[in-house]
Amino acid sequence: MRLPVKQTKELALGISQEEVIVAGVVTERQKAKDSDLSMRTLSTPSPALICPQNSHGFQNGRGSSTSSSSVTGETVAMVHSPPPTRLTHPLIRLASRQQKEQANIDRLPDHSMIQIFSFLPTNQLCRCARVCRRWYNLAWDPRLWRTIRLTGETINVDRALKVLTRRLCQDTPNVCLMLETVIVSGCRRLTDRGLYTIAQCCPELRRLEVSGCYNISNEAVFDVVSLCPNLEHLDVSGCSKVTCISLTREASIKLSPLHGKQISIRYLDMTDCFVLEDEGLHTIAAHCTQLTHLYLRRCVRITDEGLRYLMIYCTSIKELSVSDCRFVSDFGMREIAKLETRLRYLSIAHCGRITDVGIRYIAKYCSKLRYLNARGCEGITDHGVEYLAKNCTKLKSLDIGKCPLVSDTGLEFLALNCFNLKRLSLKSCESITGQGLQIVAANCFDLQMLNVQDCEVSVDALRFVKRHCKRCIIEHTNPAFF
Image (cartoon, rainbow, N blue to C red; front, top):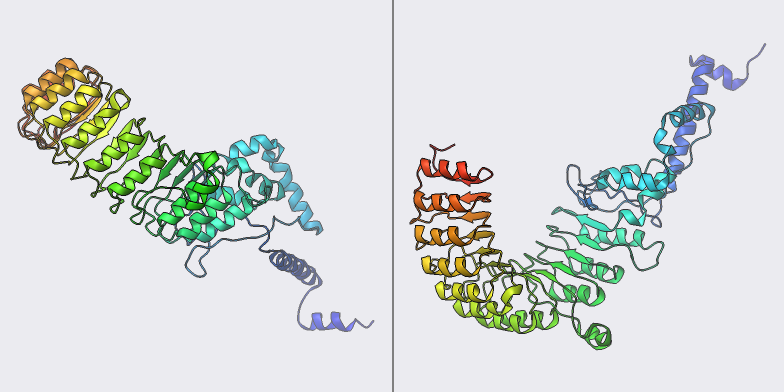
């Protein structure tokens, strides 16, 4: 009996019939894989965003970040279609049936799966999206994408934001109605283009943090605050090119009936915006009249005149920081005192021109003050502490470190008036002794933190504090106390 030519060649090469069947299955698998790769297009992005290995990229709310590949060494976005249907070969169907019987999680309803996914970091959420079609659709549920968080110096933020917003706009063309928070802190490659993408696509944005992104300019920030009328929280700390916050000229003309030329920002952090001057602060105050939290740490060009503008327009401020603003003096404290009982938090650390006179203004008018940081204000003495203790009796946190003129006398006034004191820093106060600490410990039972580093305090005094304030954590430099 003669064999077919093909079968004769197989026998001549020493290949059995079973090996031929296996090779055929492998070939089918390879074809299916090639077909899957050919299905990938730029029309339907996946939640998987490719980052350099061992680098952090996307977070959505709680998680850390993302997945895989490094062809060019920079972060780009991967776009592909949902996972294909399963292969139909009998051996594959048998394996799939066995896996399906073991996958009890597939029995959970969609709302339960979404609840589980909400606790996953973004890289795990991206992996879940590649399991099957159902998981892909669940992973892109808008409720899981109320927050976009990007971190890392190498990530191509502009492109990543473009890809993400394009996918999130799929059900509502051109707008991401569910996206409320964007955090891209420390992404140095963020430019005005990325912020413009946010401004165009995220009209419901409420919180934006771009701290450390020093490539963005005033124009990009103006676009965001003009096109996102619900923006309440803005952090531009470390953005050295930002000099003020305002509406664009077009928005001022077109949207004046809606906005009243006002911006709804309540929380503004401009720490380390070194080029911010009094004129820029005047513009901010005129447009952001609803401010309740304002942080101007190390804005070294701000003077008392800028604070005067601020108090004219922003009368609802509860927390204010002008730490390291070396031109702020007692006259600035007189302006801040106009906030009266609304002021709860004040930081004037290292403002060397502030003395007991400025402290007296604050103590007289801001009686509901809860937190005061006056570290490094060397002009403050026991008299200033006395005014503060007698008028701000609800004070809970006080930092008067590096104030060499404050002694045990000032501590006695604190102990006899501020019974609710929980945090007290006396670091490098050369005139403080153990006697003053004992008076504080005997009256302030709720004290939780005490800093006496670089102070001449005995071990017995520290033990007395620990005995009376059992929950107090003592920061000290005495090697004999432990």
